[in-house]
Length: 102
Image (cartoon, rainbow, N blue to C red; front, side, top):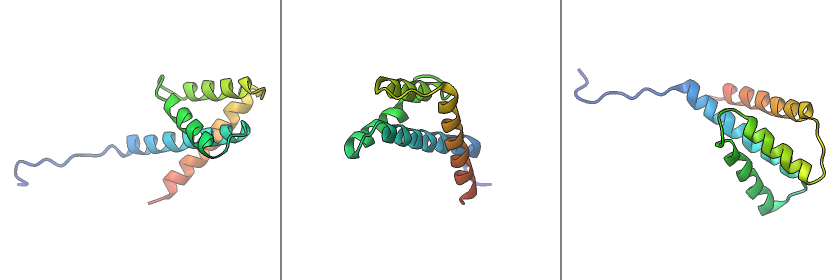
């Protein structure tokens, strides 16, 4: 009926999950970079490092570990619960943002 061409299907759940994760990691890196006092190109570079850290292992623990370590190395002590709360808040806000757009 449509010839030899098959229509590719897009897994919208996976696409949305990828968008949420990327935006979440970007905002987490931006937040942490601001906590570290980074500016301009240093901040941009740091945000990229945080985003890339998400590819070390499945799940968000690699991002959290990086941010926590970087903050600790700079003398900024955060309880894991505080960091997880920040992370969860960012992820919740991003999910709402992504799901509310067309």
